[in-house]
Image (tube, rainbow, N blue to C red; front, side, top):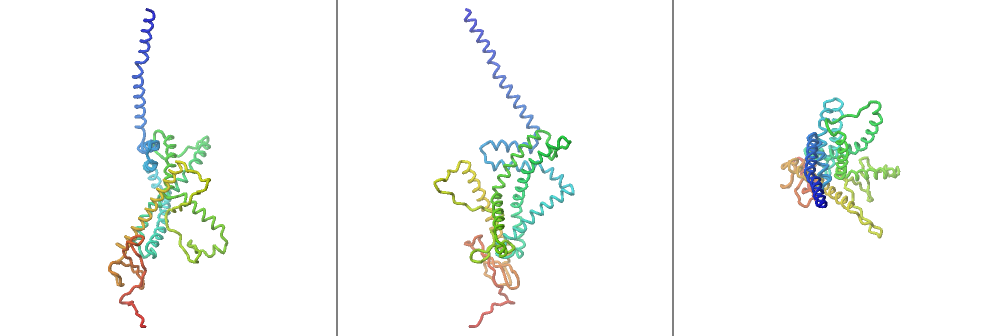
Amino acid sequence: MNLDRYTESARQHLRQVTEPLPSKLQLGLSKLWRYLNQGVAKLSFAQKLYLIALILAFSSNGMGLVASVAVIAMAIEFWPVFERVWHSLAGKAVLLLFYAIIANFALGWSGAIVNEVVGVSASHLDYTHNLAILLYMPAWFLMVSAILLLALQLIIPIYLVLIFLLKPLGVKSLRLTSHTSFRKTTFLVRIVLASVVLYHLSLLIDLEGSIETSYADLITASQQTPEQRAIEPVLGLTPDTTGETKAPALDLVLIKPTLENDQGANAREPSTEEREEEERKQTYASVRAQYQHLVRQLLASFAFTFEANGRSRCEKPAESNVIELNDYEMLQITPDKKAHYGYRFEVKKCISAAFPLVVKSS
């Protein structure tokens, strides 16, 4: 009897302990859900986008999507800062200087691209030059933005150390954003996502290749003798082994040549991360090459369709359009599927009533 009474008592005690567990678990989950809802409700729209980007970073989605969401969040977050800066005199001067730098680089580079496509100076094709500026302005904006992000990544640690050292003196950090909650957490998340954005921007514009090429050019120039430097033209043209002068390749972003891997016995099998990194670089290099080729195709088509004239005082084939360079020369543009950009550009003599073709008698 005592054993039965003890067993029944143990069962009742076990039932009292185990029965509240589902209700306690449900109560804990409901409290956690309510806490998360309250936390998300306190977030601004930019902070919610940061949260989405952070969740995507831990999922199987590509980091390119994370970088895109982070860029949108940063643009929304710092747009009020841009407006405050724009409404001040010093801020307008800085922003206008920033835009002037981008516009100047885009202006010069687009002129070189037009010259590469058509074979004559871009001053003869004003509308095509303007189109090239519009097409290359976003690319230069991306490049300058990447350089600024890189500079910020270097400045922020120094800024934090200075604020920590000056805090006993009553110096407070600048408050650029209007977040009311989770300011420090948002700051840390922004630094991480800015690093992701910088990484993808550097791959897109090949910032590493540009820096390596500039460094190599600097080292080469420092190792040259004064006599070698004296024969190089001012515009960066370098003589080849045949004595002819060649211009450097005109690309906004340099595509590094593929180097042959070491096939010796000591060659190491690349890891999964290295293979993924190489595939990512090749993908961005393909995007750059396609963009550059598409821009040149658009410029060639625009020059033929809109810039050149179908009728001219100079004699020309019926299928060609021409641009009169001066009284004696013309640029003849002829559609040609075998040409690199779909059109053939030729500088020819203008044969007209004023300048007839003179046939020498034998």
